[in-house]
Image (cartoon, rainbow, N blue to C red; front, side, top):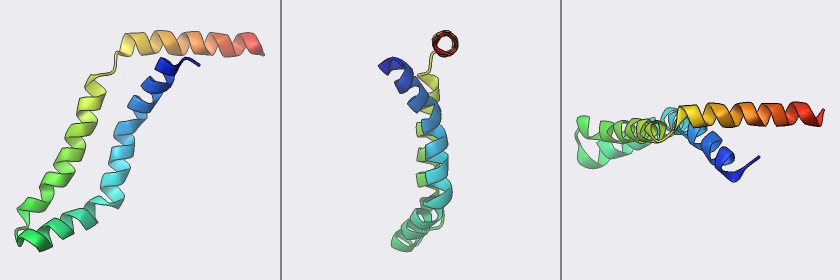
Length: 81
């Protein structure tokens, strides 16, 4: 597997990792921000930043190139067996 293909897999899974971080850690960080600032709305910038980071990473993915690399990888795996 080429290093670029591994990087593309990481990029495709990273938004879901950010989602998991948001689900598990997000409420604690949001509560801590709310406690520090005394304002409820200030805590929602953290989840918004996580969603924006995930969206930005998705925009960097070249889907056509990824499909071609996935097909080449699949064909290479079939050739081994």
